[in-house]
Image 1 (tube, rainbow, N blue to C red):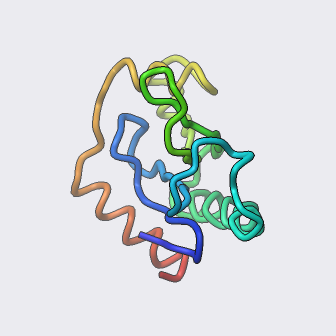
Image 2: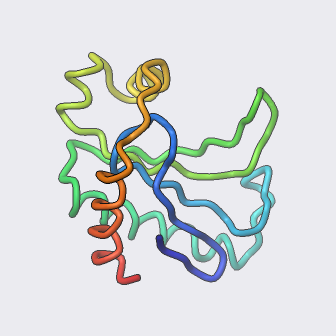
Image 3: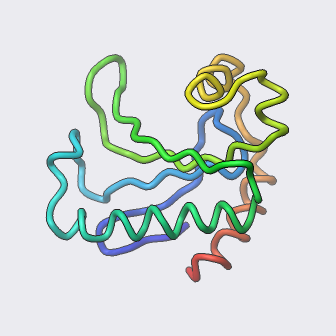
Length: 129
């Protein structure tokens, strides 16, 4: 969906809702402390741009940005989740913050592919790619 020299931004395929993006390095990285100087230099500005795009497109109450990197209880590929937290989502699941994400994983609802494609087109327009 969007790329920099070191990072790729794509829509989450898991149950965190339409509009949730992942920011992950192209290179396989298990720990944030292992990112290179170039990766690190791009990360902050990229996370800000992606969060701003989510704000503009979705207009959520808040944009959650968190690091997820476990698979089966062991470190996996580092990626940042950039999730729009809307009032509708919080009301539907009766939760916010990490509890909202846990509730969404518990529900296991995968976003509709057509809705994902449509929001990705909007994100591309905002991010300029």
